[in-house]
Amino acid sequence: MLKSIPPIVSPDLLKLLMEMGHGDELVIADGNFPAASHAQRLVRLDGHGVPEVLDAVLSLLPLDQYVEKPAAVMGVVPGDPVEPVIWEQYAALTQKHEGKKVEVEEMERFAFYERAKQAYAIVATSERAQYANIIVKKGCVL
Image 1 (cartoon, rainbow, N blue to C red):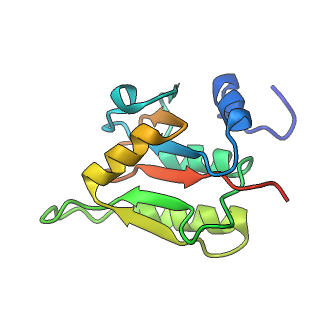
Image 2: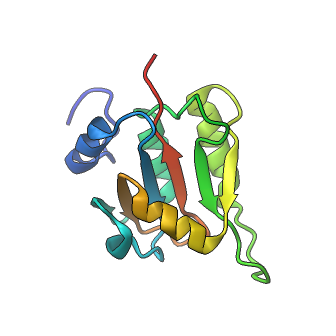
Image 3: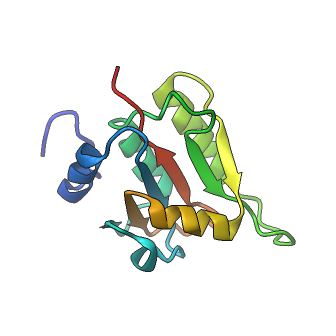
């Protein structure tokens, strides 16, 4: 254990966050996401949900201040009646850690998968909410 490091942040995740550079992206994936087949680097945080992982990650990782939308979610497939209320939690968490409203891109499902394949790493969670995947782009520590 370390001071000021949330205990949910495993040694493997902390190492990845430290390795990432400005503009690198991290996917925090729900339990249904094909994380293992899409990841260049994979960290498993089974038993945890996306909001608690996002909160911990954003306590350490600044979002990219030089892009219009430093985060992205997988949009609802047309015709699917799901209302992803979890996105409200993401908005609150990004605002909490960035001190301002953060614009989030809503991406088509397969475009999201392709972008995830290019991400620096994917964190696999046990989140059960649908459309709970989020990509965050690392910024600079100023």
